[in-house]
Amino acid sequence: TLNLNYAPLKSYFEGRDTESISVLEVSEAVKRIRRSKLPDPDKLGNAGSFFKNPVVKNSRLQKLLKTYPEIPHYPFDKNSSKLAAGWLIERCGWKGKRIGDAGVHDKQALVLVNYGSASGEEVVNLATEVKKSVEKEFGVRLEFEVNVH
Image (cartoon, rainbow, N blue to C red; front, top):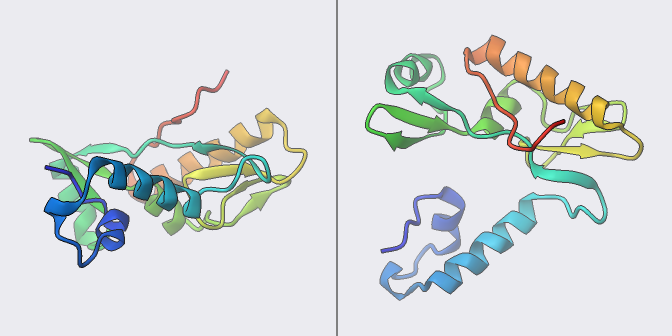
């Protein structure tokens, strides 16, 4: 059976009998959802999702839920859960923020963008500031999803 637990997919197929949904339809839905959230790299420089969704022990998740009951989380394995990095970044106030020409996308906080002439170093500096603020606020370390050299 198909896994339609991802909230945007649930919404996309709302009202449909899940048995009638094909893998191809899910693939197309994911592409449409991503296009609606991610900037077109031909128009706005970006590398897609810049950060991985962090995995935390379930004991850590329970502590976070006491302060942030709305924190999006998904089971990862028996002892841990995955958190939505975009939500963490957004809660720290980064969504739509810029430092020079490097910025956090205004529709998807996981995406760092280049509004013109930001250097790679400037983008990495922004990413580092985002990581620091998430760790300070939530005690959770973000990792880069992109390769940085």
